Amino acid sequence: MADRELQRVQTMARVLDVYLVDPLLGLLLPGAGDLAGSLLGLYAISLALRRRMSPVVIARMLLNLSIDALLGAIPLLGDLFDFGFRAHQRNARLLVERGESGGRATARDWLLVAGAALLFLGSLALAAYAVIALLRAIANAL
Image (tube, rainbow, N blue to C red; front, side):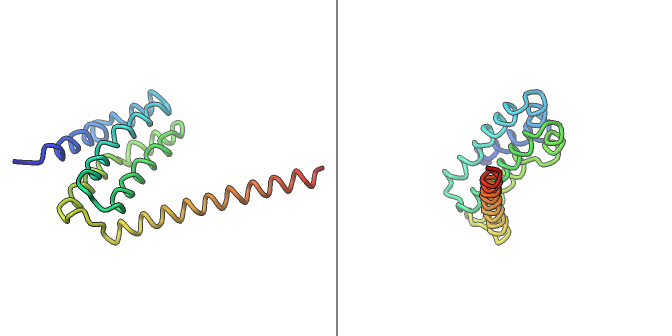
């Protein structure tokens, strides 16, 4: 007998991504639709947590949802992106593939998560630089 929880995740991913419910929600309800799609996507992540999959795989799944939500929230351009990215399908595939290997992360998982962490640190550094430059400009103007 097939795994019912996994089938449920795959069905939800198909409805959200293939039948375009997630991108249409984002298009019709800007911001709120993207939030709703991300909240629905947390079901796959909760299943990965219950199955004790690698934290790196779970981080990759969260990264997929984050990219989908952040870029999908950009009016029109983000909606176009949302039609092609299919975060829920990616997460369902990760659940199936990594579940078959005992939930272990691959080198690609590690690279993607490490790259995302570096990108995050870079964005923090850029934000800090911008704040310092702004404060210096204000101080020089006074």
